[in-house]
Image (cartoon, rainbow over the protein chains, first blue to last red):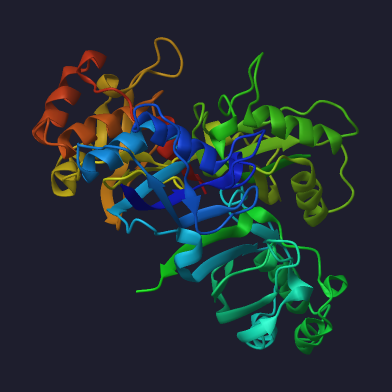
Length: 247
Length: 247
């Protein structure tokens, strides 16, 4: 039987979502916990997005198969969360179609990047924000961001996840907002290139600091060359907020 | 010259505020950073409250003496924060009276304890909240808490910081509020016994879960005996919010 679930995690302690030969990963912890519910047989978890080392999620979507679970879904949720470490939690488990795959079925992915924009850093937010002391010009950043909405070749701002893969992506939203010291970037797209959100944030911050004019973003996008990208924003500010599937 | 400053910290990585022979402490980190501003000579930091291992602060108040600092206070703030680890930050440095001591001069201390009250735990808040899955009855908890306001002998709920010290304390405020899944306890007093806030929270949660009636708190307070206290709430939910001094 195939199941689908929503996973939230604090990525601080992990070398990323995806299982690797060495090091703690979110996928690895999920598979370890699920195998205990699967008569100790191995379980493979598929996710809708591979978040980098240190990146968080509020709504990663996963699928997995269990051989024979007789105790109902509320018990599955409780058993999984009792086994998982404190920094990973599973919710909204449902039965999925036999051929459901959260990466291929995903139609929209929403990320949020948070900056702590205040003269002094916050010891309570350093795990979840990028600290920038100088005040950012949000109007300029929004002027630059709006030019990114729509379908474009984003080669300047990221690498295709598979070598030789195409680099066109469609953005539905890219906008900045401020609530007191927190400056947040909300971006929604059909899919994202490797490092794309952090690269866009790094470049848009150059606009916000006055180092680049807002139209630099569009000019650099048109170059289709990663030499024109600023350094990526650090990972801890980023969270995968929500994944939407086709109906 | 004596200085006064406000310190915020995430206590997760520390065995408490107070310097000890072994292990990382907030006081130890502050003294290390300050000695670099003091021609490498040792500096002793005095705080207004000794927070336990894992307890946080938004507004701990400290004092320290520097021999001869010629670069002004904004530079002192920048130099200190550049040296301190990410989970400690110093703000509001001012010159203090020669005999100022933040523990003896403090007249009111405010703490906040946060509970994450939702069926599933939050991987983003586990460092800063106590997770309680069953819904808490805030009306009952507030009925019980209000009986604590005023001057009482709190021997049931804490130990004097010095052996044989008296256990009377005056509370100005003790109240619960809810904002979505976060249930917060705001408590303000002239001073607190060792573990007093966590012991009160642990006992008031027994009321909120329906295990104790609200008038149990007052009855147990009258016993003046720590056998009548519930287990303390875990440290990570607690933060020292503010310290006020006499004018």
